[in-house]
Length: 169
Image (cartoon, rainbow, N blue to C red; front, side, top):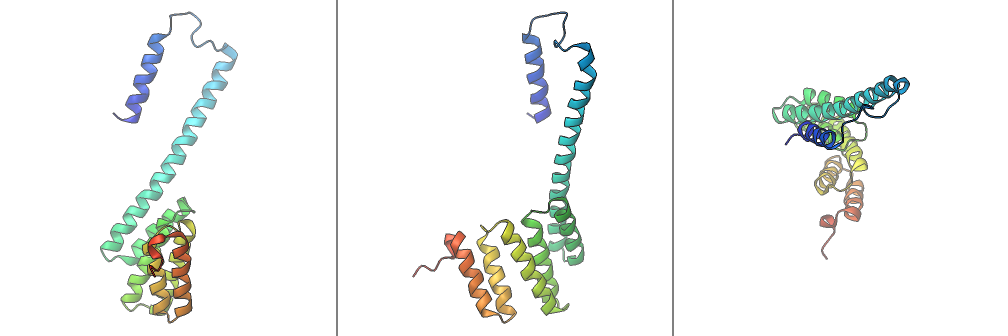
């Protein structure tokens, strides 16, 4: 069942179980309007908050779709929209990083693209460090930039939080 259907069913059952009375909800007349306004305001704020989160998720999904279809600049725009709506998100910086990697692979200012990709991976991993693949990709980007010490350091940082990155020996 959908959530609104469950809520309606609960309200109907709760209301039908209470005895009939002339008092209604027992709220005095002078408080009915302010309490109704407060309830509607709270509901509107909750709906706007949820709508913003859903819009961020939609932007990320559109960004991933654009990235898969080779529209890298469009993917960057969608990921930037998602970051504006949800600044602490860990997935939108990954989309930005992958779009930068793809542009670098296509030959569009490869060094700057790799630097942007590293920045995107760092931001994503700061928000959610439990992504072994992102740690490996960050290390690979640093390696491609010729910075082997930072590549090893990235893998070592990742190994602290991701057991799969630990050296078995």
